Image 1 (cartoon, one colour):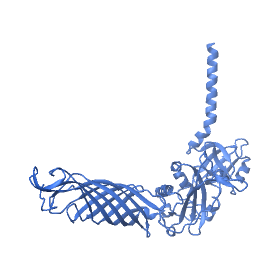
Image 2: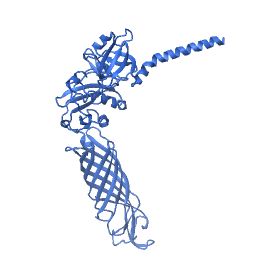
Image 3: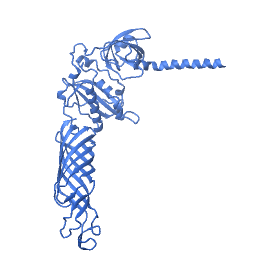
Image 4: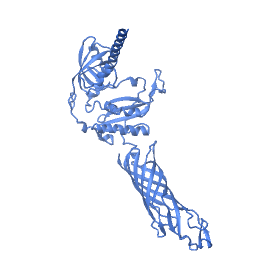
Length: 478
């Protein structure tokens, strides 16, 4: 009995090992991209002529040997394009290569790497152009504001990391990268179309690389997604796909790059022509590194009178507080006197900026008086549609220079909201409202009415609401 159980156990172990090797050997061969031999599925989707192939990771212009294990036929081919990484498929072949091997799409092949291109090697008929000499203009992204900002920053970061030179307009660039997001539309045989149903990818990112010297589309392809975070992990891959034939963008390279993108995503999707963009970024006014701000202010200062020292807690008086000769009621005070603000804003992130301001106020609870101040605001700009909406937290310091001021609550904290829209080319008109609460008490001499000199000192709590209208100049691009 024990021997029979052990025999069954060994049999199960052998079957398990065989299944594991059968299922995961293609994955292992693809994960080890530095190995000289890979085994997996080959497809035939390329439309190019000649012994050429597309691979997910081998460098463009690599020389490979492909063998059909079923009949032993081998061919040599050149990698000229890209395919998406897959657990099973390792190569896509031209019709001529597939025919020479005697395989059909889906058959298994074995690939051996013969040679990798040397650094700086060019296809025949092209001249060398170092990557750092290649300039790229990433055109304004056609998408919702949040998607557009994310895509532009992500692709600019990839271009910078890849050593390419970024320009701020198309005229100065060798290539233009166009990015456009639109709804994923399903196109039926009868010509009808509708938005993709729930459960399928809802959006399509169109990517096109244009050679500016002759306005030729070097490469165009699409990426389907639903949530924005889905794009994040694929940005390096998508950028590499777009730049696959750069700096080898001769006409020959353009001709052989037509089939590097998988066609599955395009079968059920309506194709649109990407618009040509010849103008500077229309959103640049919202993405400046520095702004200089000038505004006219209407501050409303509310002084709440404290009852300390007042007769019956609400009256100033003449005589003794226990039996005053006369008294007069004194209440809270509201002071409205126009002012002004100037400042500098530093937008160090697309969603966060810091603004340092100088404030000029000209009135307090007693009289017209100059109250200079300075403040710091931490803003969190949102960019819906054509607007700039920036809630912020604020802190300020001010000083009352009047002779009757005994002490003044210099520090204040609060919050505000700024709403802006484009004004001229690089700036914005804005309206700003904020509220600031002064920390501590304001104490003043009692100079309101000479007939009621007591108490000699009045105590107040101070709150200021400010409505501002102004303009801010954008100086540098982020």
